[in-house]
Image (tube, rainbow, N blue to C red; front, side):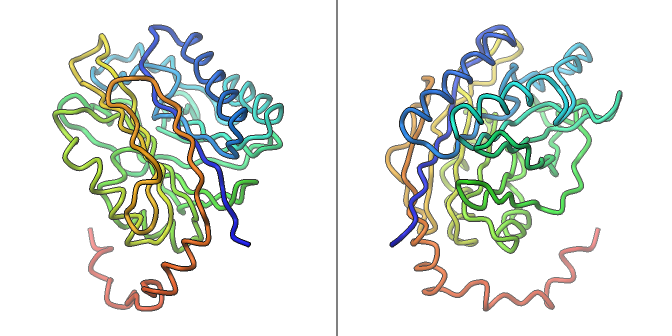
Length: 280
């Protein structure tokens, strides 16, 4: 029998304060678990605004330790209570002045499995991320969770195909891409890049984007979160471009073997020919 994973992503608008934003996400986790979801991923920097629209050191206060900070501990308890895998995209302080854009992964028993730090950091109009984050130097972790083998690739990372492939080589079955991306800049890429990555690397992708216009700028976050399979087919409908929405979908893992047996992309790779790609 094939294995089906019921997976979820959650998109929402900034509530105006950190505590109410956390509470909205706690309720989303409860709603996902009530629908039978085994894994849930939140949007990029989930408990705050997308503060990278401006360059203001006051937002350094949103960073906290992972896994020893209060938010991770709070959601570890919730994951254990609900029996659901949670992926928490957060602002991480390793030590004062050493800050990362990070996703913490919590298993369904509440145990902390590890983290992925965003590798590619943009510095373009409305996305002043180098002011806030160091780049992660990743070994492309894939987390062996109660819901299967999970990878994470964060927002701007998605424009770089190498990391998608590294996650596939490490055994990922589902890769989540939590994002904060705006209508005017990247909408034309949103339903192109992640489906292409799913096809090229033969796994499922969960793409998450927040919604709304925040008081820090005019970025119009357009939601439209979705799951896509390794044949570039959306699993169910794409979410709203304006409204808060919890997307819960059944992902049939048998599709991975079916597609990989058909195409054999991993067999036919030519890594010895790729040396120029690692040149600076």
